[in-house]
Amino acid sequence: MSSRFSRKDRLRYTFDAMMSRGAAGLIIWLGMLSAVLILVFSMIILVTGIAPENQSFPTLLWMSLMRTMDPGTIGGDQGGAGFLLSMLLVTFSGIFIFSALIGILTTGLEARLDSLKKGRSRVVETGHTVILGWSQQVFTIISELSIANENQKNPCVAIMADRDKIEMEDEIRSKVPDTANTRVVCRTGKPVEPGDLDLMSLHTSKSIIILSSDSDNPDPEVIKIMLAINSNSKDRELPVHMVALINNPDNIQAANIVGGDQAEVILAGEIIARIAAQTCLQSGLSVIYQELLDYAGDEIYFRHEPELTGISYRKALLKYETSSLIGLKPRGKLPVLNPAMNTVIEEGDAIIAVSEDDDTVVLSGKSTVETNMEEVFHAADKATEPGRIIMLGWNWRASIVIRELSSYLPSGSSLTLVADPSLCSPEPPADIQGLTVQFIQGNTSDRRLLESLSIQQYDHIILLSYSDSLDVQSADALTLMTLLHIRDIADKLGTHFSLISEMRDVHNRILAEISGADDYIVSDQLLSLLLTQISENKDLSSLFWNLFDPEGSEIYLKPVRRFVSCEVPVNFYTVVASASELGETAIGYRINAHRSNSGKGYGVVVNPDKSEKVLYSKEDMIIVLAED
Image (cartoon, rainbow, N blue to C red; front, side):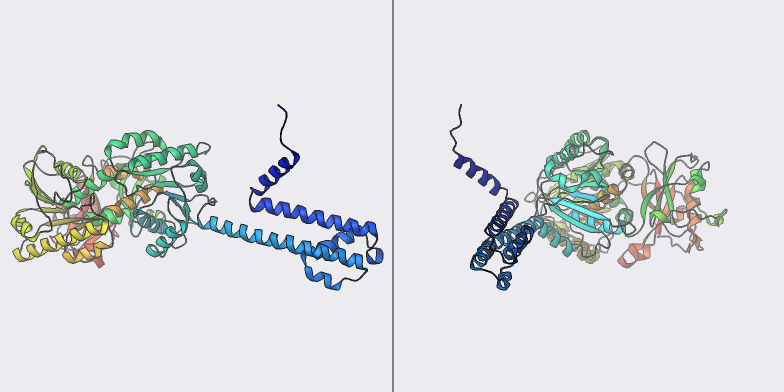
């Protein structure tokens, strides 16, 4: 079919297409027009011979260009009327063309600045940590990464979320004012879009942290982000290291299928429930977990130490003075906490130690250490009696907490659940083997209800946050009210019991300390710390999972008199040696006199200097890794 388009139509179409390119297209057209005008007028002046002093063509081109760019140049022109008129026309043309060009450049620059403010430029970094998504956990993660990166060169944390870049940066500066030498870069985009992920340079990143949103069902979005990462990282030489939070246990299998070997998937509810169950039965345990998970004190590190090859784990325990061994990672296998004391360290095995930093895990160099074995005293364990627990409040983790408690409590124990049906839809599990569960409906912050429960008859009290139906601050405020009532009732009755409270906002813990509760679980903070630790070291995922698992070895606080006498001061070498005789690994102690003193870490000392001597009291506890 013959073309029915006229030349005019084609020229207009070509012009429109050029203009649609934006500022770049306009600059090209104006540049071409300026060049044509300069060339035409220079040719006219040359051909007509009206130029003074018979200047050459290159000189005429230069003169025309200068008058186009600077109108003031025409003031110094001399020559005939024809030449002056030609220069005037060139100058007027230059005024219009260059004015338009400056306007276009200004508009283009403003558009580019607006684009940068929107966070749509590519992150050009190597070895950076990428955070995808946005929640309150991001502030704790940034704070912890800033501490972890203090000995790194030019570290960077890059964040992408479907939020305004400026708002994210302002909120981070407000809540994390000091990031030390770590740069924080924010980008606006949807992490589920592979095209947006291109901006984050995932192929050069060190690790990727995927945050769960605050929606009712965040797991599908997390899994979609993992799929987008897989699509984006096909050309990467090394596998990516993803860390993701999954809330619903039913979604864990799908997440593992998508992530494969590249992802460490954390089952958020299961972890918090296990920590709550363990902390409920052992006062001070939450402080120990906080110490191990954050970067402010001592953390867990893996290290290959060839000098330990061929010796037993029992002997290796005494080879470090300012670090504490907690286990081994056999070559090509998963970490083992508190292995059998006669386990021989083989070539290629890594030791697992608690230390202030990765460069402080060093051998003491001592051939012999001082141990006062005369003060070693193994008191018999008391028979464990059935426990009585009351749980106030409800969220989706409550049933998991109850199940975990049944793994630790002796047969015949009982649990009373009290929850407000107007704030939640509790589904208490049926009686679990060895644990009787009773459900009572009521307002858990009502003083009359609390007094009617006779709380003095219980050994342990757990306060759970109504996080399913209330926002963070409202849920914490309700918990604080309940805490104050319970502590006041206990003081008037002159009774004592272990009291553990779940908080959502770490800042509310300072207010909660007024109530005198024994322990606090700040669920969002603990999950943030866990994500950060695993993003820095993939092997920590299986280690922490084992640490929180009822099977195998966990952290326990046991009476000092089980290990040493309380008559004279002893160093921690002696405590470690005594615990090893019982098949346990000692990593610290808790001074009972300081249990309410936040300035002294609530009496908890993890990884003490083993040469320092301490006079313990009968109420003090030793922190150990043991099977029960």
